[in-house]
Length: 234
Image (cartoon, rainbow, N blue to C red; front, side, top):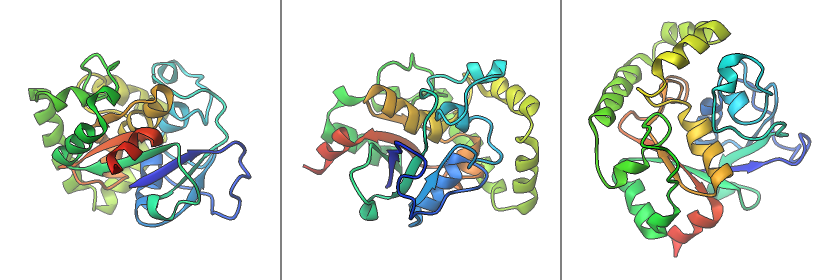
């Protein structure tokens, strides 16, 4: 479980190192492995989605204005780390686990805490699957399994880092996968939406979540406001 807290200023928690790397989902991976780190404007070197969605960059290009819901701009930064060693209560908790584990947590906390503003769009939320499955969900799982096979190869990692530094490539890819595959799974779906709505959101992993975050394609990601997460521990 990864704890996430909004910073009031970039120098808050200055004793912790600043993340500099490919993406937010990579930073979450490192936090899940035990690191406590700060993510600030300019921390993300490759991904063009997450800085805008997380309020670390003001939207300017047409495709960036399509990235919604997104956090208000400017956001000073985030503190990420393992929940068990986090320095104080977080704003949200990111849980990555199999669907039935997440469903059990939802049932324990209360289904009324699930975000219901997704309009059955699987690229933004899988909350509807708590009640039923869909063919679209099977397609996303198959694609993620394929991406997981590619993720360990250095050439694939280098290619994705090169391609997705380009706004043109990023905008084109976003248009293709929008409403068909999971999109912005950890930055928007598991972080921005719970912070904005105060509700739980479950999502399939997106391309970055598998390729850069190196998550298990059989698992899903979810974002839990702290107040709701504490209900699962009662």
